[in-house]
Amino acid sequence: MCRTRIIATFQLLEDLRLFETYKPDVVLYDVLGGDVVCGGFAAPIREGYAEKVVIVTSGEKMALYAANNISSAVRNFEDRSYARIFGLILNHRNVENETEKVQAFAEEKKIPIVGEIPRSDEIIRWEDQGEDCDRRRRRF
Image (cartoon, rainbow, N blue to C red):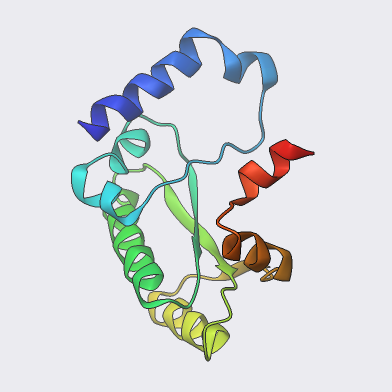
């Protein structure tokens, strides 16, 4: 079911001619580890919507597990001239030895770390209040 929804979403973007109108340099596509299993992750790659994949991960066990699944899936497509892995972005979550864990993963998988997102104390406070960044942003 999720594959169908994702393809329908990309079809809607095409129907609205958003790519032609705005000519984006980068299009972000957010997936969860489960999307790899259901086929939703692979659909945009097979349909030609991705050339380079950047994986955002933290040092948390499940984040690295998902990053591993995503990198394996993308590597399966590389030999068919679909997308390729461009790199990792380390999204800091203040996990113990986080940088070392992600560096070790990157070295093992031969994926460069191309950026880092620092952990924000403001985000931690919002999470403690039961809010997320999007809701917080809309208030201002």
